[in-house]
Length: 195
Image (cartoon, helix red, strand yellow):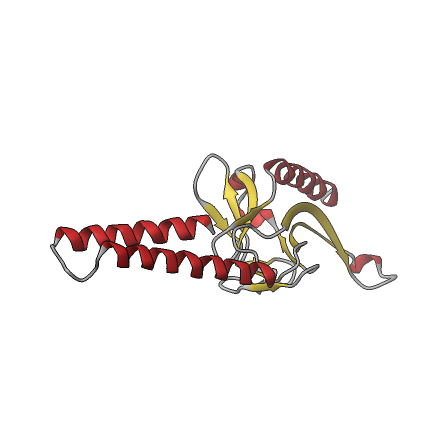
């Protein structure tokens, strides 16, 4: 809020200075002050309306991102030979806020770098999530299962954390420790399921 008012006032002052330097008679100093006061009043009223409607104006939403290793067992009941074990890492964004949030698909941050591995699909269902925006209502979550092996054995240990980004490009991320723990547990589960 304060940033909006401050930046608006700076823009108006720059405009006034430019007009004065060009010897323009289009605006007097009193007209400029009146414009700045009106802009401040309109900004403040907008802020009060948004606050009254419970629309967050300056803060990130309460979105919590978690990462855990998980095992899915499938098959026909009673038929041992049909039993299939699949190991994944579950990535979840949970909305603890009072308002809906629109999130872009998650990405995996590469350790000691600025790049990301895009998560293009849910590896359990093979449904593409690339390019979609998920509306997350209060109390709801968005879960995506990934198979780290799909990113290559040489890259798994480069995973730093998972990040979801909203429509305003605000980041919501897991911790690096949580990602490391999930990777180690996933590796153990994979070894155990092959022995």
